[in-house]
Image (cartoon, rainbow, N blue to C red; front, side, top):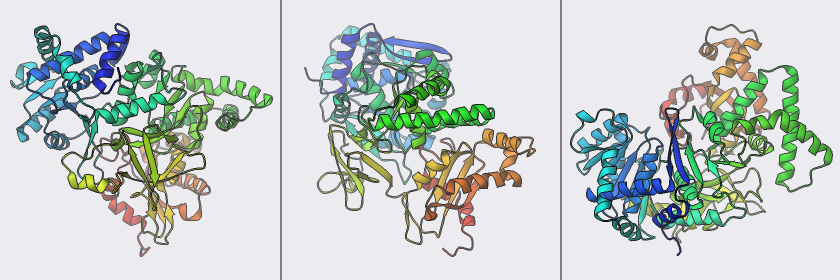
Length: 604
C-alpha cells in the first residue's frame, strides 16, 4: 500500500524493524535508547493521552525542548491523532514563545524541564486557550498547578487508553489526509513578526520520497547518524528525523555541541547533517592547530592540502587520477586526512553544509578526507530542501539540481521561484502575507538571487534584501566576501556593511585563541587574550590579515574599514538565528553607532 502520510510511514517501519534500535539520546553521559517497537508504543501512548485530554484532529500542540526522545515520541504521537505540531526553539524568550503558542492557538504545550516550564506558565497567564502543560523532566512536581502533568503521567494515561481501545490510535492515524497540516514552523522573524509556514503531510511525503528517488541513494537502512541540529528546525526534522524514518536508519542524538566529537567517536556515524558554521569551526580548529606546530609539520600539511585539493577537483570532474598523484595522495591521506575522518568516527561518507554558502577550500579539504560535503538549497516554506547535490554528479560551489518533486525558475530580476509538492500552503492566519509570497501562477518567491549553470545546477548568489548596492552603483554579494574572511582562523564572524555607501566596511569577531598565538609569535605581551582587541601592536597584525584577504577581491569589494565587536555574535545575544545565520537587520540596528563611525566624513 502506498504511504500517503507520515503516520503510515511510521507504523510500517515499526512493523518492519521491530526490536531493532531506532533512536537513542545521550543524557548526562549515558545513552537512552528505544527500539522501533518502543518508539511506536510510546508515541501511541502520547497520542492517545492527548486525545483523551481533548486534542482533536487539526488542533495544535506545541513542543518546547532541546532534542530528546520525548520530543520524538510527542511529534509522532501528535501526528498520529491527526493534530498539528508546533515546534518552538528552546532558546526563545518568554514573549517569543507566547506569540507562537497564542498565534497557533495551541491547546497543550509539551516542555522539557523547569526552565521551559517557567516560559509555559508565562504563556498560560496571557493565553487562556492553553489548557494543559506537560513537562518531560519535572524536578519540582510537588509545587506544580493541577494543569501541569509529568510526561510519565501522560504515558500512563495513554497506556490505559490503549487497554480500553487497542484500535483507536491506528484509526485516528489513518484518518489523517494528505492535505492535513502536519506542522506549522515559524520563521525566525529577522524582518518582523515570525510567520508560521503551514506544512502538510503531502509536503513532507513529497520531500522524503523525492530524496529517496535520487540514485545513488543518500542513505540506507544500515546507516547510522548522530544528529545535533535542533529538531525545532525544519531541516533536521524533515531531512533527518522523517527522511531517516522513511529509510530506516538509526539515529543517536548527541548530548550537545560540546560533546559532539566524543559522540561521533562513540557511535561512528556514516552520514551527518550539519550547517556551514559547523564545518567552518572544525576547519578553523585544524588550521589553528597546524599553525601552532613546527615549520616542518606546517610544510607537510599545506603540501598535503594541495594534493588533496587536486584529488577532490579531479573526482568532481570525473577525470583520471595519474599514478604519481595517486601515490602522493596515499601519503597525504595517512598523514593528514585520515585524522579528520577519525575525529568524526572513521565512517562518514557525506555530511551536509546547507543553509549558507561554504568556502570551496573547506569543501575540498573534507572531500579529500573521503567525506563528501553535500550542499543544497531550501527554506522552511518548501519543507527544507529544494535542490541537493548528487553524490555521483555534483559541482562544488553550486547547490545541486532540483530534487524530483521541485520545479524551479528564475525571475527576470534573478529571484529564485519555487513550485512543487513540498511548497507550503501559506502562512498561518496571514492571508495578505501569503498572497504576497506567491506569483500569480503559484510560484513561491524566495527572496534569494541565483541562476542555473550550463549543467543545470543552481547557484545562489545572495539574498535579494541582503544584496549590497554601493552609492557608486556596484552590486555586491556580501556572503562571498564574508566566507573569504571566515576562511582565516583569525575571524570567527565577519559581517559586511555598505548599502548605499561609498565603500564597504565590516563588523567582526576575533578568535581569541588564534589572537593569543599570533601575539606570542610576535612577542606582544598580554595577561589575557581579550586585552589584544585594543592593543595597537596586535591591531596592526589584524590589519595585515585584512590587507592580504583584500588582495583576493575586486577593488569595489575590498573592506576599507572594520570594527572588532568584542562580544561574540551568538544566538543567545539575539544576533544569530537558531540555525546560526546572521540576523543582519538586528546587528545593523544594534551596532548602528559603530557603523556610522566607520563612515564619518564620507558624506554618503
